[in-house]
Amino acid sequence: MPAAIRRRHIGLAALTLAVVLCLALGAWRVAYLRGLGEVERQVQDRLTINLRSVESEIERFRYLPGVVGEDSRILALLQLRGPEAIAAANAYLKSVRAMSGVDELYVLDPAGETLAASNWNEPGSFVGHNYAFRPYFADAMAFGSGRFYAVGVTTGKPGYFLSSRIDVGARSVGVVVAKVDMGPLALTWAAAGEMSAIADREGVVFLSGDPAWTYRPLQALDPGTLDRLEQQRRYDGVDLAAATPLAPEADVDAGSLMIGADERYLLGVRAVEPDGWQLLSALPLEPVEREARLIGGFAALVAVLALGAWLVFNQRRQIVRFKLDQNAVLERRVAERTQALAHEVEERRRAEAELRATQENLIHAAKLAALGRMSAAIVHEVSQPLSALDNTLAAADLHAQRNAPGEVRRILESGRNLLRRMQRTIKHLRTFSSRRDPGPPEQVQLSGVLDAAMDILTPQARDAGVLVTAVWEPGLPPVAGNAVRLEQVFINLILNAIEATAAAGNAAVRLIARSEGDDTVVVDIADSGAGIPDTVRERLFEPFFTTKKSGESLGLGLSISRTLLEEFGGALRFEAGAEGGTLARVTLPVYRAAATGEKLESA
Image (cartoon, rainbow, N blue to C red; front, side, top):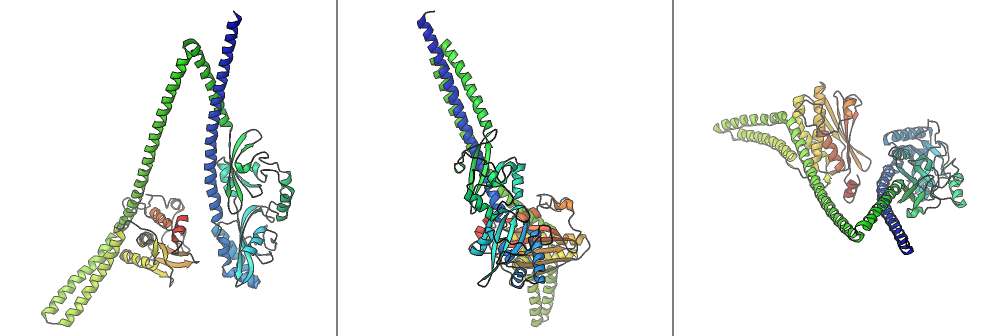
């Protein structure tokens, strides 16, 4: 073979190899960047979800120290410090811990000495220990409140400490501290297989779904930081100086790559304020790299085949046609996908509108079902005044014939009273059944709502032989909500109590409304029925679940009642009655003219 031809073949082979390598590397790069972008999006989505979880876990206990500090037993403890005051404060703190779900509650004097605690009679009690060295105590005494995450020096258990200063007049008398266990959050991450964690402002991971990350710094800590952490005893018993940094070469604030022992990860960071924490979430890059390698290899194979075809069948024309075809396919797919996305958005909007309409229809259906359950008693309530009115008019006619105007006026006044009684009943029923649009939350006098509900339910209770007694505090503050919908809730709950009491052969239903603190009104409805079985209690709020016979109930009352209350920032729960039967407890927020909308939105 001539040297010129050999050189041309060698040059062509080198060109072919260079083209194949360039195409493979380009495809690998494009696939890798695309996969990297998708992983980054997933990391950011996970950070957003986890940030909401962390904030809600903290904020649900934020108010607790301040509320506990307003109790008279805590104030008596800090001012008197006698044995009786200490015992009363210990019992109160233990009760609040059981009801709220907080890990621990304790009270410190101005010197940081623990006077009372919810674990006063348990191993590892805080009573008698001094925590003046803790930043949450110093911050509370200086600024009124404090927040601090640390390992407990007494129990050895980590927790998030929320503190609030207690003032009597112009004098600070102590600090109330609530310890919140954030361990369940880490267990949730671990169960979901998430590589998520929270680091403090110094970069020390204190909560993680991966135990291997816990109490390790992101980068090596300087001696000043180690000394400060040691003085605060934030991670008591943990040797942070010997801990291996998780990302020694990574720029954590920029969310750069973190090199693990065997894998590479994309690390995302989100700030958690006001503590200066860093919320971390990482996803492995190995699937992205594997897919990029596969696509690069596939691109190389395609390039080899295309170049072979060019050598045999005029490569230039085939490549041009191939590119044109690929561009057309890409444009068609983009157009199809855009159209599909537009259709999906429209379908979701239509589904949301239908869902809202269905919810309103179900609420209206529940009201009509309640009216159906009361229909016999309502008919009886109206028919009696009608019969009496007929007799009254007949008597008036006789007295008119006898020319006795005094008797006629007396009898006509009696007839008007009967008419007023029927009008009042019909007015309540018409208002209760007709309105479907609740409108914005408004100021509602709960006593008026309860009076209206009692007027409607009185016939039902009387025919069932059940005595319903209602008591509420004088000067009960107005609540935030809607009068008609709250009336629907109480009619449903009181009617359930009447039916349960009548079925058990008893004759008493008690309704008590009272204020609880400055922001809450509580209404208890206690019946003396047979109570709620444990198997039924778990399904009480399921839509269309009912224990009544078919046709007697839609099974929507309790589900809709709870939904209506939650729309106004309220709550509904059921408990076993102290003397048997069932206690339904309704909690409603007190109306605040300037902040009602914000409260309802956050609720």
